[in-house]
Image (cartoon, rainbow, N blue to C red):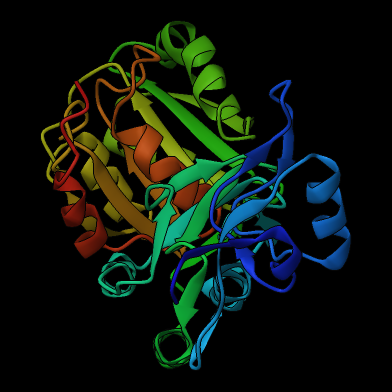
Length: 323
């Protein structure tokens, strides 16, 4: 690809290297636009005699074609590809979703010289209509071989991102206090509703309990009968882990532990377990304030019915210092 200044009458079929404006400042033609015979007549009418253009060489494809070829292979789930001008394409969430990103594959693609991809954060919530990724090419033209290699990598490795829909989540909440469960509900319910509302969810099943192993276990067993998407245990105390009242009650109810301790602050004492694929989350101290904490990170994937592993929780340390 070689840029040069040519006579306007010889510019048809070539790619414009700069945006052209009318005298009043209104845009006439955008950079990267392939000039047609009609464009040439318009430029002559505007009094232009020369333009700065380039043209494709063998083995090159236009920037807009390049980004669309990769964009259509980039994601899955509730995703729509929308072309944009200037060698750019956007991926838009078509439903409230949790964004799942293969960060290693994204790094590999971004090491190429011709094209880069920016995405939202892994496990982040995306509302319907929100942009979740942008692909941008080098100006004007891209090597066809590079695009072919990139497409092959995506076919072999899978998608860089997935917009996993959050569809009608059923959230169960268990409020617990050493003296009276209603106290926990009075303290936390408004904040709980606000936090869940941020992710298009609400408390569908609510119980209160004294913070006693047997009572908590019975309450969890009762909530499981509703087959919720997840169960949140909101306690007024700060449990010490799997061996405390909450942890023992989870075991008694048949749950297994996936992870205790999260490299996230606030929220490091989070306890995550599963009972029949239903996640149960205890996060002491995280229900007192709407301030961002570990719940805001783990709720989107769990609400999207994604089974979060202990390894993935351990990986939250990079960026885990929230305040």
